[in-house]
Length: 131
Image 1: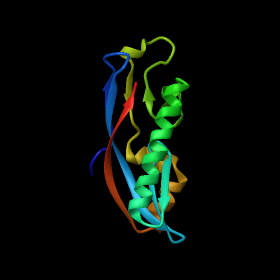
Image 2: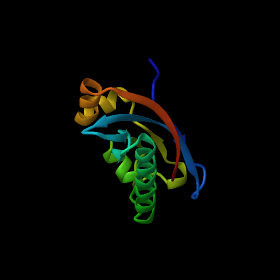
Image 3: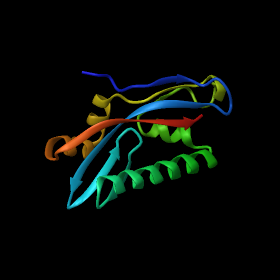
Image 4: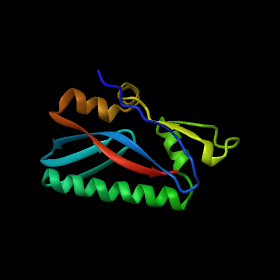
């Protein structure tokens, strides 16, 4: 079984790190849902393409908001990511590790329900998060 985890060391203040994010697509009540448990984000639409577009807009809003408020690391930590100590480690040296799929299944009742009750497709979406 593949391990869905990404670790990064930030090298500069304006750096990004790339993360191969597990994303699940399924139908619920006649709508397509695209859900990324690692960030607890979802999009929806009448077609899978609409759901993906909705998800992309939601993802962009998440990144813009947490970047502008300087809360990205705190939010990632809240979502189960392993983030180097926020107070004592300089931002440029901080490490970040996404939760594994097993950890997400354990923490996320919605994801567990999708796995148990829905027909779904899983794919990895490459994203970049500013750090």
